Amino acid sequence: MATIRVQREAFDPGAEINSFCARNSTSGGIATFIGQMRDFRGESRATGETVSAMTLEHYPGMAEGQLSELVKEASGRWPLDDTLVIHRIGSLMPGEPIVLAAVATAHRGDAFTACAFLMDWLKTRAPFWKKEATETGASWVEAREADEDQAAKWTR
Amino acid sequence: MSTASLTVLYFAWVKEKVGLGTETVSPPASVVTVSDLIDWLARRSPGHAAAFADRKLIKAAVDQVHAPLSSELGGAREVAFFPPVTGG
Image 1 (cartoon, rainbow over the protein chains, first blue to last red):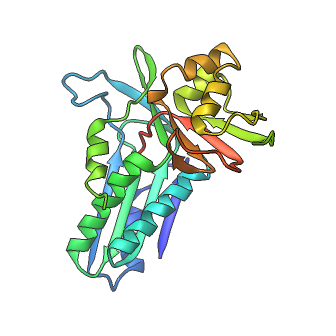
Image 2: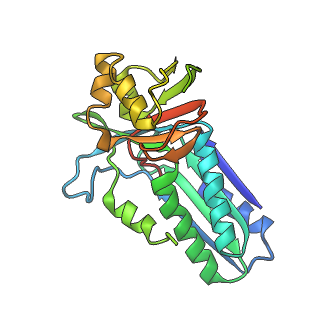
């Protein structure tokens, strides 16, 4: 079982996790990751420019397709009872959730691992692009090498 | 190989530089790989040339599957060009 949603509308992570837990009441472990929009650019708030808004562009069709592939790959590696991935597109404000990944399994180890895997692969494979608006204008976020290294750990 | 029509999609700054989100093209038979397609597209306009100026920055998908620039187009119907992804 899996649910994948790419949506323009804001979502409530608490409500989503509650209903995910309810529909997987027999799973022993549920791990979740919530990615939220930062209000600064780059590695740290101390050195980064303030970001006031973000636009998320995606490749319709392929984005959903890649998320399905990720979930399929995770399901092949770990015994997952259920998976949920929600990803925003369009306009976002600082503090808003961008992405939610939730994984239900019998035991905690697989839940933690599969959730980390989903996010690492999503970061480098799912076709979404962030554009940040700051006082000096808007610019596209550059991919981080650290994300590639992180994803490469899962290659087998 | 053929002059069948091919849908080309651009995303993020590649789209901004090209000035188009999508176009339908009929590349000549000499265009065999994704890289050949880039060479051919880059001659269409100054915007295309700017977008493809440094192809180390360009990623491609053929029929919605990530593909290295060296891959052959085969009977592809849709090719997309974009910078490395930054979602999540």
